[in-house]
Image (tube, rainbow, N blue to C red; front, side, top):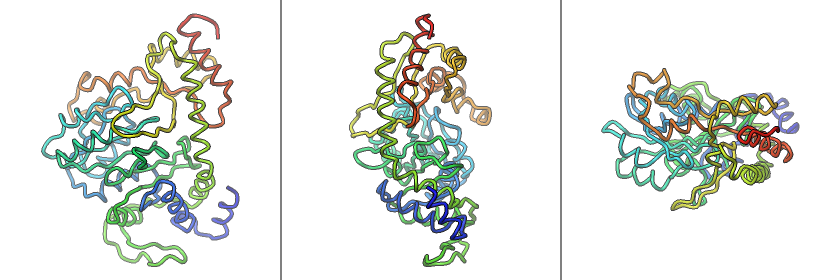
Length: 366
């Protein structure tokens, strides 16, 4: 990592420079994407991807009711209108049947979100999208390393995104993100939009200087220091993914059959071959908030994803949704809890977490 950062300092180009270009090339090789465009966050990546794919003011985008708020707020920031759909109870991906039910005449896009450790049903969603004439854009912010029939997440439609928020499977030391796509027109538009709509690039030894402003864009360039960190960590990404899988299996073995633990994460086999990646380890449990407090009292940190479904968030009150509209999403919001998971987590700590969960439900001391 030090070598990459020293190169940034010595080069003197700290944003949108040669280290970002090097990272984009490395990510293209890893994912198989024809084009990778680095930006300053996963949220910006979603906004710019939607704009580059032709979203027009008022266009509707079908998104899951169970996801991080950026999945829907990015639609609004890009000028569109989110339309919520329910998720499948296993894997938490968009339910193709629900998409077909809610998509109206103004719907132009569908945005599956690949959550936690699992890809959405891209075969079923692709069939619905083709039938309704919808463009598929993927919120694959959590999905680096995930593949569907050998194709990396984000490359199963018009394009996708990656987030490099510090806690992600591949994390920077601050915010950073990228758009991945095989469409050269989408790539060119995103590349311009991230740099105030300017076509070309202002780095040494790169053909073309950004002098033409063809679009009204934003300042969403990736910092070279973040690219340097990501380049260093990319070399051990597959080992980190393997380690996460080992720890997830240890959780699964220890928590199987524990009363109160309703559901453990698993890879759902559909019509495609899915390679999941354990970004986080999310279980469904009874008395979720009480369990989280119990674990916190024992020094175990957890995370709740997500306590309020998107269709019931105050910022989307104008859409007129009520409790009960999307029951699977609402059930997930009541029950899901993320347990500690990161590559350097000692196996003994996994055992202690599981002992604490058993003590909560079985009334024994941890």
